[in-house]
Length: 80
Image 1 (spheres, helix red, strand yellow):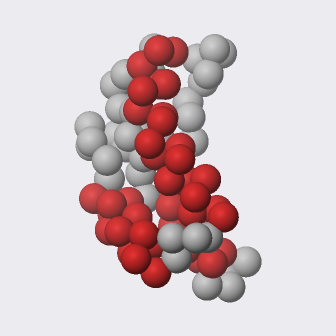
Image 2 (cartoon, rainbow, N blue to C red; image 1 turned 180 degrees about the vertical axis):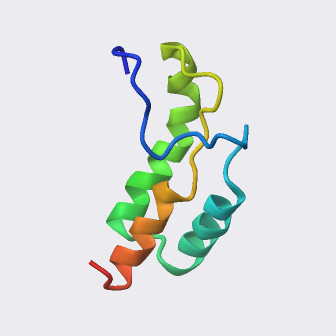
């Protein structure tokens, strides 16, 4: 973060809010796989990242896009 580099899977060029596709996937995971370890990590990051990124000058879009969640679902259902 201190190097000022882009944070993969955070931010989307056209949105300045959480990607709606991410929200759908998050709601699915909360319902069907709330105890999945990878989901717990993504969920924690979702909760803390919007507060951390502005501290490091990443304020234009500090919300996740769909890519930050889709891999967790694929992994959970065996697409490794």
